[in-house]
Amino acid sequence: MLSILYMSEIITAMHNIFRLSLFVKPYLKQSSASLLLLTAVVGMDLSIPRLIQRIIDQGIHHHNQQVVLDTGLLMLGITLLSVFFAVSSHILSVRVGECVARDIREALFLKIQSFSFGNIDRMNTGQLMVRLSSDISAVQRVAQFSLRIGTRSFLLLIGSLILMIRTSIGLSLAMLPLLIITALLIVFFVIKMEPLWCAVQQQLDRLNTVLQENIAGIRLIKAFVRADFEFLRFNKANQAFTRDSISVMKFMASMPPILTMCINTGIVLVIWVGGLSTIRDELTIGQVVAFTNYLLTTMAPMIFMANLTNVWAAGIVSSKRVVEVLDIIPDIQNDAVAKEMFEHTPGGIVFENVSFRYSNAGGGMLLDNISFTVEPGKTLAILGATGAGKSTLVNLIPRFYDLSSGRILIDGVDIRAVTQDSLLRRISIVPQETILFSGTILDNIRYGVPTASHEDVIEAAKVAQAHDFILNLQHGYDTRVEERGVNLSGGQKQRIAIARAMLASRQILIFDDSTSAVDIDTETRIQDALAAKYSNCTLLIVAQRISSVLKADKIIVLDKGRIVGEGRHAQLMKSCNVYREIYDSQLGCDTSQDKVSTVLESGVLR
Image 1 (cartoon, rainbow, N blue to C red):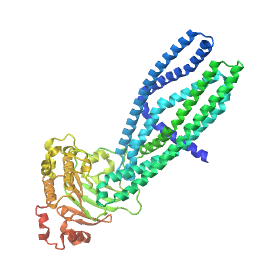
Image 2 (image 1 turned 135 degrees about the vertical axis):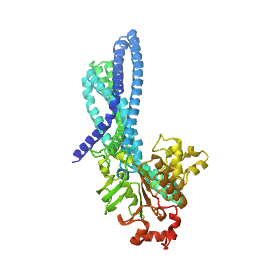
Image 3 (image 1 turned 60 degrees about the horizontal axis):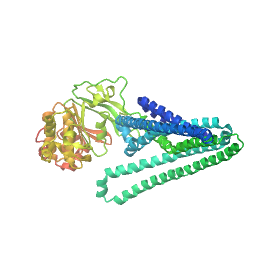
Image 4 (image 1 turned 120 degrees about the vertical axis):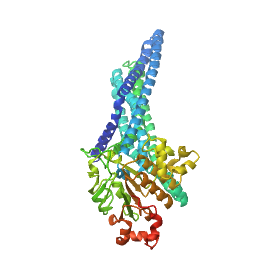
């Protein structure tokens, strides 16, 4: 049973290695050239013991100085040529290894880019970072060392065995048990190394996850004085990684002495058996010396390949982890007959009996039997308590997640009947979590439209009420945004994100609680600017703040994934208890028109 399990693991490992070896195909010429050069180097290396035998038997034994001189010069020429070929082969193998690593890294990156939100939710950032860095480096080392050392060692081993047999069959048979024992020892080390490296890579995953979380949350850690607790988390992961790494190194440390003992035993046997044969005139001294050299060139490649077991073991584990990511099928895929969405669409949205739950979550539906309509060019506000399903609902429109049941129509077309790229080109989104990239403010606003003019950027910033504060910065629109926008306030980051969405100028706009960090006065000016410039766009606003939704053409109220109220403000105050409770908690119990007039004084948004 265990042997079947081992065979299954070996077959899987070889399949993964083969999958990744396909990345070598574009560099077949360089790989072939490297192998040809290596073959030439091996041939020249194997000729040296024969030339030494010639010097001893034909030169020294017969006192022929000319043979010694000529053969010595020939050996010197072969050595110089071998060095040139070896360096050329090394350069080619390094180039192939680097290019293969680059291509695998690129394929992995593009694969991650194709993931849906559901795929990303199930993946761990630390694990993905290890796969993009450490695992690909391990695969790269396999590609380089296999070309440079592994192939050379294998060719030397085969060539040396053939020449050993041609030199002396008797000595070869005497060495056979030792060679078999050495080979079995190497196989044992290879089999035992793979699970040890697997454990190391898993611990590295955990360590990277802890590091990533700590670096991303360093301000929160300081705010709650949790540095000691986080150090304990890091120390635990670090100690586990160190422990498993030491286990691997201890196991590896026992391998060279054992194999060296095998070599020394072989040399002793050759000298003993060969010496006796020389005394009996069955072998010449040159043959014994040549056989000893061939024995060394047989055993040395075994040691080289044994030393490569850690590279191969790490590469096998890493190749499995890389292939796992490459084999993930994105949750969201275009239908085989999906069409491009029309370029100019009015932007009407219809939800028909939509229900949703995360594929990896237990329990009931997060959204249950949701149905509503948004007319083109109108504003829909979505209100509800935390966890009611507001963000989940708007994330279904651009098809970041697929529905569990029901359907969503945009201008009468099911969103699953069109390609996702064409769907996303009709929608601008300001997400709940404001994300800015390293670069300038100008680069961040132009992120969705890299070719936008400076004037268009300024116009979008004015709509988002960002233009004035940007001008007050030392370098204006060329101000550098630090990592995650730490040099900007929450409200400033939100307004830049709004400007980014406005610049894209798409038919459907989704604001997912995207003005929570700005004051009510600024929010009102943003809404007024939207009403003036984007009056033909369909707008969906997710909000916690009642003042953000009072001007909407329609408000839907969510509670535990269900619609519990739908209508305008005045209607909901009469018919929806949840809406009234939210209103009372934020604006007080006075429901008179005078109470809300300060919010509505600029008129209805549409």
